[in-house]
Length: 49
View 1 (tube, one colour):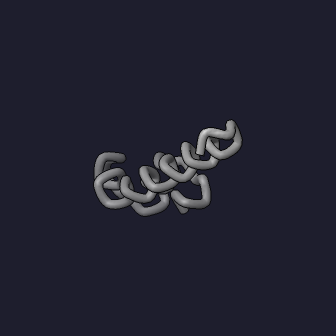
View 2: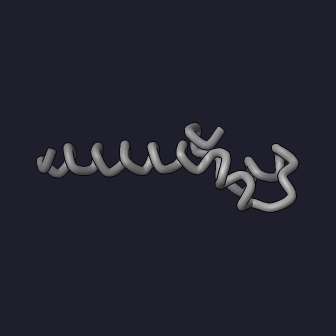
């Protein structure tokens, strides 16, 4: 869900996690990978990559 753009808070609620920190600890790597992909795409779009 994180890779599909679903906000972490929504994923946390749907997963039934007591705190969002649990969700971030489990799925945080997915949002980090998406952020790297976004930066790479922006660099290409700007002719920097």
